[in-house]
Structures are given as structure tokens and as C-alpha cells.
Image (cartoon, rainbow, N blue to C red; front, side):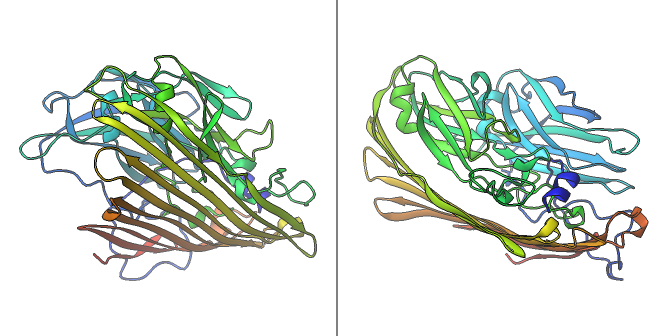
Length: 538
């Protein structure tokens, strides 16, 4: 599978809502030269019923790898403190093109990491919506804009990617209050690649009382790290190898000291798993809106609040030295103590569990690699603020297990894998302690058969789940459940003209988002590029 994956995939994203009813005559027997615009089952961004203002951030076409550069100015008529800010990306492309990876930055802050769908000859359009209220501090002043969806247009790949990015600002008026957004959004000074790591300098205000780093970590580019979860030890006969096998972990360090760990999400772009017919209408989870990994660095705030620059390093453990393929841009969100010009404190505990796990290769007619891994980190620190001493403890434990099976020549290739990421943040100050816990689980179960021809078939199921609960004094005060499940099956004749591929493909996504007073439960299904089901249960 790896050879086909490398040949057929490049990457980037987009989100579309608003399904069209199924065709009464039923789907065609095979894919044609046109199909339904991409859609996802996730909810639109909830917005308040207040007046709004719109600003176009970028409107351009991407034909090569030249970034779009422009400028942004805050809107007039909606004030400077908003109840919500929503980013919308509208895109269109026609002809023949790979999936492409892209980003949008305002004032150097990465506000969107995305990828594109693969087009039909007649063309498709899609859109992505994202709540970007947390970047409001950057959006209050004029900023430079940079956007790139790297693309290649020639006699073979004819698709020109057209995009328009807009921001909608909702005023804080009446009973609608301004959003409790961070006071500052920072990027790293002098950020650069350092071997397999990404690092730069961070200087925060001296009265910072909460600091959260977010990392848009993506393995991409069509190389082995786009499909890192399939890597095998050096002894195994497979096209992508790594000493650590498939084990990867995204880490962040402050002045060389490990400050956070996380399990990477196994995002699949719309050319992934050797079969674009899987993703033409419903992309895989997160493919159009890449979620950043968040690290609460508040236990290190006493160290960071000294007014001097500190070295922040992001690395992906398990990547072979010298291999490229991971992108890890960093934003840092800062909340300040407005009752003090300076906050002092210290890191009081740092307990790292020894990274553990095994990777074993078993040769045979069917080769097999089994792997498991686990790692834990707990850090604590305190701050003396204008409202008393506040202590923060962050505990995180990540784990992974997988079974990878393949036959000679990778004609058949299969993976069954699961990743977990459990995080707990406890804050103690005046009043009862508050704890926020999240259990994240990512799953991938799929197989490719017939890679050597003539007919390639892919069956795949993925899952993206997060259970969260907030406790105050041991009593539950909030909870949420996100459960995004995608499944599909597709097949086509290889090495023949498009009209002889006899391609078929079915897919289904169910997205649930539940919480106190909130319910979203939507299912979409497709066959041969047509939408056959659009059902809501809430």
C-alpha cells in the first residue's frame, strides 16, 4: 500500500455543510465525471443573534507554491471586543488535481490549517467554517496576511484552486458580552527548523497567569511521514521504515525541559489510502479543519514571566533523523493578571514516566508488525497573583497500539490501530479546586487489497472521540462528548483511462456533539459520488 499511497497522495482541507436531498432515482452504478460537492456531518459554528461585520482576508488563486500576501484591517461598526469571530473559507476547483495542504496566517498567527478535496472534471466547491474568537487580540489591529495552498498546474494537473477567506465579527451588545478570549496571541521569534525539531524564542508579559501553546502538527507531503502509522522496523520488508516503527509523539519543551506530550491525530487527506474515491464527497475527520494540539504551560509561567526570551522546542518523537514531512507551527495564547504588573512563581514538580512499549516484527507469507507505546508526564507550578496564590497541575498520558499486516509486494496491506491521549488540568486557589479532564481516542481500521492489480479495493473505518468533564470541588459542573465516525469502501481498475476505471465508492459519517443543553447528531451517506442520506437525530 505504501508505494501507492506515496504515488497517489499529496495534501490539504475544507469543510462543507448543507446537504442536498438524495436523487430519487438512486445513485449511478459507477462514478461519472461529476459528483456532489464535499460535505461533512459536523455542526456549523454557533453564533449570537447580534449585529455583525464582514472582512475579506484573502481572495486569490493558487497555481504554484507562491504565498498570497495581503493585509488585514479590523472592521468598522462592530467595536473592538466581540462576542464571536468566525472564519469562513470558500473554495472551488475543476479539472484534475491532487489534494493540497494549506494555511492562513494573520499577523504571523496560524488561524487555519487546511487541505483541499480532489475535484471532478466539471468542478466542485466547498467551504470551511471555524471559530477563531481566541485570536481576537491579534485581530484588533491591522496585520499582514499570508496564505498558501501549494499547487502544481501543468498539462496533467489542471486544477486551479480558487479561494476566498472572510471573517465575520459579532458585536457584543445587549445581553451578549464580549468573549473571554486570551489577552495576547504570540508566535515564536526566530522560529526555525532544528534537525527534526522546530524551535524559537518566546517572551511573554510579566503578568501572565495562564499560558497555552497550540501546535498545528501534521505529517504530510506525500512521503513516509504522511503515513507514519504504517512505518515498520528496519528488519521488515516494507517501503517505509523507522527505528521506532509506527510510534510517534508530539512533544513541547521549555528551555530544554519537557513541558508537554500528545498523541498525533492520524489525519487522512482526500487522496489517502490509495483511493481518492473514498473521499470525493465526505472527507475524513479533521481533513478540512486541522485541530491544533493544545499544551497548558501554566506550570512554567513562573519561569516564563521573568521578562526574558525562553526557548520553545517542538519535536515529533520517532521520526528518523534527517527525514522531513512534519509541520509544527506554534501559537501561544496568554491570559494576563490585570490586577498586577508582575506575577511571580515557580515550577514545583516535574515527573516524567519512562517511555515504554514494544515493536515486534513477525515474518511470513503475511508479514506482521505489532506495536504498543505509552508515556506520561505530570508538571505542577504556582503563581502569586493579585487574587492570591494559584497552583496548576497538568497530567497527561498517551498510548498507542497497532497491528500492521501485509503480503509480499504490499499487494494486501492492512492496519488496525488505536491512540489515546488522557489529560487532566487541576487549578487550586481561592475556593474549591477545579479539574478539567479529557479522554481522547483515535482509531483507524482499514485494508487495501489488489494493489498489484488489476482492481484495487480499500475498506476503511476511522474514529475521532473526545470525552470531557469539569469538576469543581469534586462535583461535576460541565461535560461534553464529541464522537466523529467515518467509514467507507471503494474500488477501481488500475492503470486504465478514467472512463475505464469502473470506480465505485460508498461512505458514511456520523458526527455527534453533546453537552448540557446542546445536541448535534447528524449522519451523511454517499454512493458513487451522490448523497444518499442526510439525517439528524437531535
